Length: 244
Image (cartoon, rainbow, N blue to C red):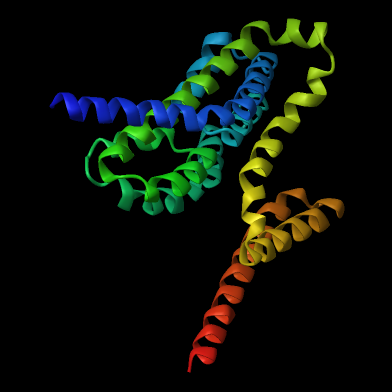
């Protein structure tokens, strides 16, 4: 590898890390909350850290810890974890076209989270091909290490922190929804996305308010996607009609 190539690769790593820094405001509090909950559920600090290193799946980790602590059978724990992570079957193919210049990207998919996907889906298409892999590596490693570090903080010192600052018990659970809100907010500048997201939000709130929170997420997601494609199809048909 030439000096120029090394410089480009290093620059891409740094840019990826810099772009991922805003994610830490959500990752660290949520990971700290996970570490604390895992510790309270009977997992050791090292076990909580290993879960974040190996599973690294946000909501699935909370589900995993809760189900194991309640004595659920292993096959059910694995099935539910895979079901929640099924969305990655959609994520990875959408990013693959931008990272196929090297087979190393296959190993980096362990670091693909909802937030990294949203960030990469926006950044990668605008980058030169030589910088994409380095950018993704830097962004995903910073996010991963911050998640593991937050887990360690929660597992080791979480109890002491919440006893000293009780308000943290109320703040930390809101960190993950706030992180998703920050990622979604720019999409509301598009009427197409505003219609789809608005539908999803309203439907999810209606189901949750009527005591059906488990149904709210899949149904609202499906309806939001349906609205997106219907509005998009109508817009294209109108453009074609006016162009005649």
